[in-house]
Image (cartoon, rainbow, N blue to C red; front, side):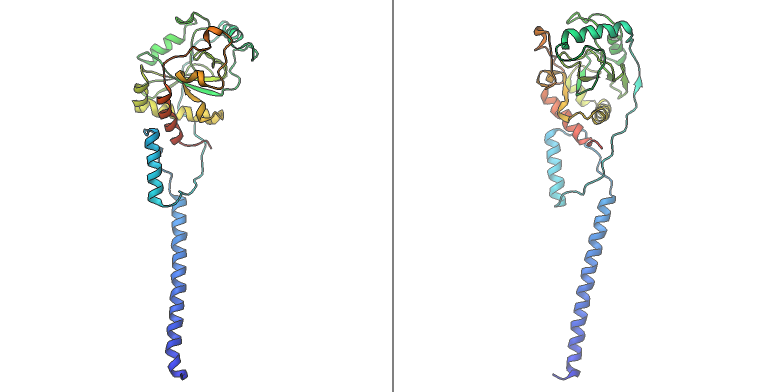
Length: 273
């Protein structure tokens, strides 16, 4: 074939090669743009109202839609929620009674103290009272409780009102009587209400609860499984009780099935930083 006839074919081949190169370059640029867009996109808001089944379904749907795992996002430590400091009286007498209580109930394995040395558990309760003020009026007096007739009076570290207001009654460094067998190791979080379902369905209260408990568990490195309902107290690995008659004592608030929903919501609220 003569050079004159070869020239058009060579030109066509060179044009095809150039187009391929350009196509590859465009593909790389497009992929780079997608990667940058994914990295800059904000994380989806936590689906706090999902149950465990809903959460699994949402996760499966997201994976099926994208066709690939979502890019890893930077994890930020949760910020402290707004907390109203409403302390109950906890003076020398109540501290001395707390030391005596710790000696009776936990003296075989800890040095008796009124202090909560290192929390390992967060216990979720409901108050069986209609308001924060009614709950405060129950915890503030240092009188024997009607059930066990012991001193000091019962208390919890936090009370969350139905409005979502978070009230702190006691320093986190102080032991409170809220869960037999776990007071030595547990932070108590009360929710104003009368049933598991009332607490789980109150959006403002639940939102505040998840923010508070996430902040607490991340700050104290408490595992998700150790965020429990009062009704789950006997199954906690931290449960200890020196009084034989109380080794099987628990309460009905926040049963395991309902706490599965709560823990799922807590997990969806985000990991610790």
